[in-house]
Image (cartoon, rainbow, N blue to C red; front, side):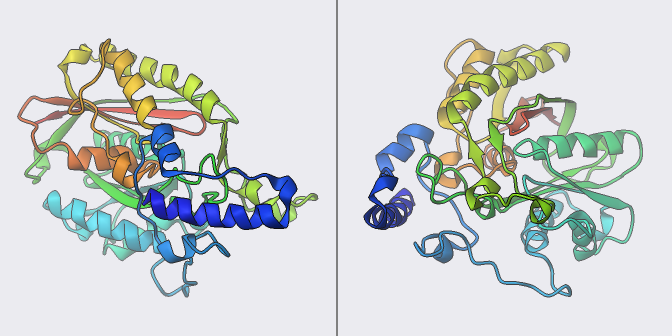
Length: 349
C-alpha cells in the first residue's frame, strides 16, 4: 500500500538527513502519491526486501541454469491462463514473443526458454523490448506473423518485474511501479476455439527519440571508463516533460489510426490505455473523444496495480471486456519510453 511504501521511504530519508543534513531529502506522503498519480497500491515480487530500509529492492533468489528463470516462471503462469481461455495448450504454440521493459538476460532468449517451458517444440520465439509499449508492439508482431502464415498460434507474454529497475529511494517516483505478468493469444479467426474472440481490425506503432525516460543499465556498464552512479542504472524520468510530450503524441496516433480504419471515436466502446498516470490517461481519452471520458470508456486499474509497464493495458483489457457484445469495438494502447506508442483496435466477434 501507499502507507507502507511511504513509511519505508520516510524512515530511510530521515536517517539519511540525520547523517548528512546537507542532503535535505524531502518526505513523501500517501496524499502526495495519490494526487500525483492516482495510485493506491501495487504488487511486488518481494515486498519484504523492497520495504527493508537497508535494502529497498526485492530479494530474488539466484537460480541454477537448470531451473526456470523468474521471468519464465511468472510469464508461464500468465501464458497458461491465456492459452486455457483460448482453448489451447502449450504444444499448440508456434510463435512466442516475450515483450517487456527489461529482459532478465541477454541469451538464451527468454522467449525460447518460455517456449520450452510451455512444452512447445515447434516454431520460434524472440525477446522484444520497447519499454511500456512492448505489449502493443508484440501484438503487432504476432498479428503480422499470423496474417503472413508464419504462425498459427502466437503467444505474446509480458512478464514485467518493474521492481528490479525502480529507484525506491527517489521521492518523486518511488511509488510508480508494480510487478505483473500478462499474456495474449493471437491466431487465425477461422480456426480459433476461444469462447471470447476479438478480431484485430488494425495495429499501428510509432517511435520518437527522447531522453526524458531513461534507464542506463546494460552489458557495457562494466566496460565503461567512468563507473556510473548506482541511481543512473535505474529508472529515471522528467515527469512534466513526459506528460507534455507524450499526451499529444499518443492522442494523435490513436485518433489517426481510428480515422484510417473508418471509425469515429464514439464508435469505440472502451479504451484500454497504458496505466501510468491517471491524469495522463484521462487527458488522452478526452482529446480523442472531445469530452471527458467515463470510467467505463477508459477504465483505470493503476489504483490497485500501479504502473506495470507494458502489462497495464492488457490488465485493463482482461478486467474490463466481459460486457462486450458482438460488434463492439475497443482500442488497446501502450506508450512510454523511447518514446514508443502502439495502438491495437479490436472488435468482439
